[in-house]
Length: 281
Image (cartoon, rainbow, N blue to C red; front, side, top):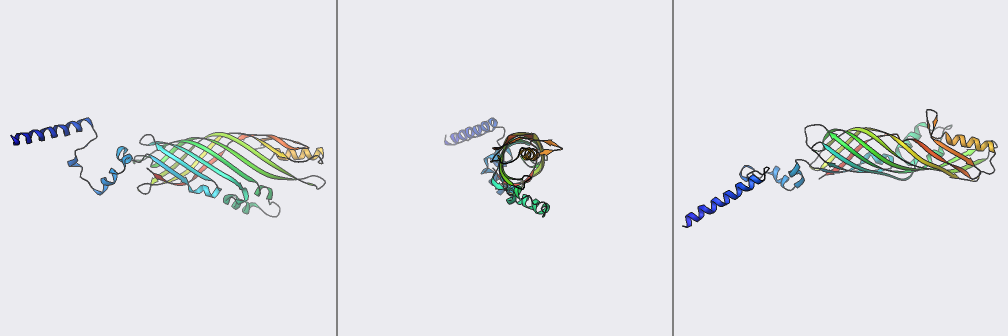
């Protein structure tokens, strides 16, 4: 009798195990999946075990430091080879002459006759939000390999420019111009990403180009009542020529006894690139 009960219990346990395997098409019998060092690591990574790749990636753009800015992004794989990325970049108020890249440029072009001290002393700040979709190639699953991307970006920018003007009598006027602008743009890019360790990623954004529109204002409060009408007109023309491409001016300013007021409207152009490192999970 005890022997029959033992066989009956064994049969019930076998049927339950078979039924469980049938309800989960991805399950595999334990006896053909021995525990090894490789699959032991997988068992403590539910995301990797479920999808075959890590779906999330948080990164920091290391090369942004050259522009005194900080850039962070979050990437999420939505299919095996397509991901979406949300990025945020900001630059705190910084003198143009203190930006490493800007300093190198000014050292190259400045001389005794062309030393743009007012530009070096300009203070800039900005921030940008970017939404991006990446399409990866290659045989590896997940956000790895070369990719093509499309993105949209919103940015706002502030520039404080201590503009100096000398009138025909030799009198100097200091006009604290402030430009505030914001804009939207769209762009495309190419890059490559590698998983260089179990959870460490390296992203090389090779090149991106964007185009859109900027709108803003320009203001500079100053007492210009002692300036002649002719000099005010000359100053207005100089300010309007500060930003322009192919003789097209993007500043429409008016100079009066109280200073400068006007609008800014132009293209939102730019290039993207850099190297980022991150953590995948």
